[in-house]
Image (cartoon, rainbow, N blue to C red):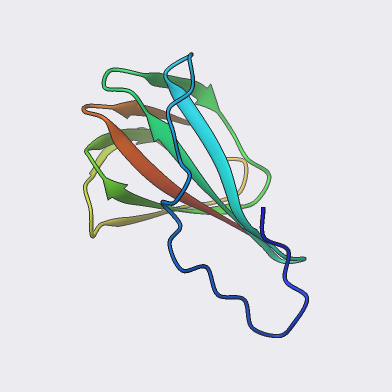
Length: 108
């Protein structure tokens, strides 16, 4: 986990060291500061992260693979290059349609 000690924090590769855990999901915090946290989630194909919510604004970006996000009554498919923002406390579910890595940025 990277904790900034200066006004600039550089992470050369957010994907480094990310692996899928025995449950089909891996979790790696790559940056933490007072107002933002960046986490990379690594999914086995077919893994579903059941409905949950976060207390902060979320930015979700697929680093690789293909993910389906269900939130607010809408279904969005994330592929590399796409970006999804969710309001705080919005219930959502994440399904990996193939082996995938998701960069999750929590703001606030």
